[in-house]
Image (tube, rainbow, N blue to C red; front, top):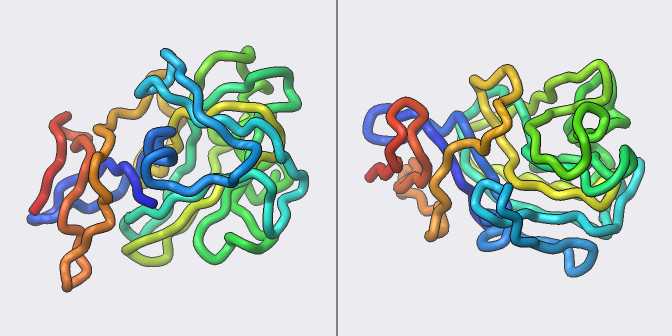
Length: 222
């Protein structure tokens, strides 16, 4: 499992305050349930590949969902705004998912808007037409932005499972700075071809893959 990150340089190491998890990240470094999930070529996805929840939806969430993906990632301590670039593949009943971090995984706890916990995340169809990729956090009116707090700097794990299916995911964005949902375009990132969990003995991230938000060049720190 691994991650795709976008960071802002700090000293000789990147301070990772944005994390982008794409369908390619899930496919090459993540884990998925043996059933109810899939990948599809899609020219409208950021890198031409979409992750799909085909079935196995649960409402409310359960400890061991029948459909899920998981990815391990590195980030700084802090509060992150959570957005997903995805699309509904059908009507309003196929566009929402659950998101769990760290010790929430394997429990009934999950991350969502505290005033609308039962809605999960996504809900693209409440705002947009089906079959169109859009960024959203939680779209059922009133549209809200979900936040997650990383309590420490280091490795974290995220699991997603469907509240409704089918629907497609292109990218998941965790950002300390993006307090409004992004435009329609994919979040800039360079997909890693190595497992980016490599760390030094002192615990600092040895190599970061991504594009620096300020410069637009691949970020490689040593």
